[in-house]
Image (cartoon, rainbow, N blue to C red; front, side):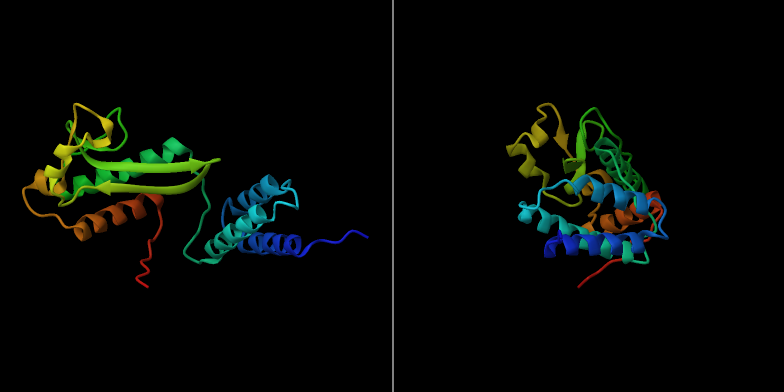
Length: 192
């Protein structure tokens, strides 16, 4: 008689828990099934990879169990970058800065970059991301480098554009508000 290993039992239990937690969330059960099917062919001997996926699955289970999460969605790489650009452009607009995009990634005010972005995907999974919205940075430091490797462009900040000091906290509140509106969600701060 064939028996499941301990790790296989943990994966099966996690699968059942995820399906249960996903029941009331549009699109979530299909996403859970697709995710587990994709990893079903991993050989048993690759225990480190399986354990990593188990930890990742447990984090997703916590997200599914969170009552504030109502939908599961996926972005394509360029969609996610464009969403971040749209968020920053709208946030800048709310503060009085007319920003836009260019053929280069990021957010621009004319030929000056006000926000750099970095997004890293592996196998269609977002692994790290970030944006750097220049609020009250000393722009003289950028004269010693070629920002973002673009020779004929420079950098600006909210403070430089508005002629007053714009703190990171002020800019963050606008960015978070816009992000919540575009994703149609509530963003809950955890200051622990």
